[in-house]
Image (tube, rainbow over all chains, first blue to last red):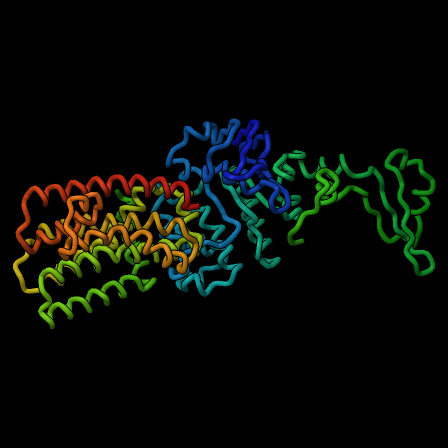
Length: 287
Length: 225
């Protein structure tokens, strides 16, 4: 679906590469997470992939065609959800969707159906300037689905949403994947990435540091240990045991046989820990 | 063309919702009343038609593009199948039609003999030229304040031919500036002007529009994000 080889891009008047010699591929029907802190080169990469900025070196193929060979119909094949809300504020939510729908040769969804999908139907006839940020973000999201694109680029789709609506958007993304859509998800929210993505790529300082499934990355980079918590005279005692020989480890067996056993955890790292260990950088953002 | 006509409908609605169309019509009505009540001389009527319906498009398109830029919708337009020429044509038509209407009523209010074909042509070409220049100007700034500051930079050179028009300094060099052709064409709608000058004006304005349109398309691809 997407093939990127040795992609490098430097902004005009800049001495530093915003994106430096990165290579990756996104398979048909997968959710590919592009993770990194602000300024890592995520958004620049996305802008390059959707032809909003040009003048790169390297090879990029999107939807099985080299990017330079795509013309205007490229945008009828892809959907883009922006990080920040961008609507005609004086128009209503429904008018906004109708306006953008008029640019596509085929529109798959009625605007009102999309508004219902994100519980905005009651606000369909209100001007967008009266919407909260969360409502504008939900409108942003469904606008990308108007023409039923095969490939979606979503930039921080749950940003500014409360947990309930964040759940709703994530469920819709999973549903889209189940319908065979390919999703390129740009985010610094490791929880979303961990939950949604089939594979993730870590970006830092314009470089691609690591690619893999969230599960593999957490297991490979975490320690193969189990932590057992047992209450002892009111205090919680924590003990870690190596996976190796666990079935014969008498201390472990004794701990889990204790009537005061409180909890057992595997000591895999979180995706955020893996990111920090790999890139040496912290992620900003909401958790 | 289907996309263009749909966008045109939305652009007209946005012009109303942003208050641009009511303001444009209000200013036009003021000029019409002035011309009607004070029997303004033809020379001044031509100047008013040049300065208001024709040139004001420069300001109005700037306001519209800046509204779009500030709302971030220009970035969204850039990732739809909408082509730059469709965007520019829709903006040009939606702002030129009101300019034509106001100009015709101004001409009627002047109660002098008018060649409406030449008036129509003069306003159409001048308005489109100034709209395209205004579009390029608006894309280069971020705020309304910055836009107000650059207006004189763009408009002052285009006003130089008024010196020739009012007879203060006549020189053939004025033909280098396209607005000389605008004034000649608008003047031809009200007074006798040599045919070669009328034809030359149409040619110069058409070539200018072609060139500025190319410039605007390039700027659209470069700066709409």
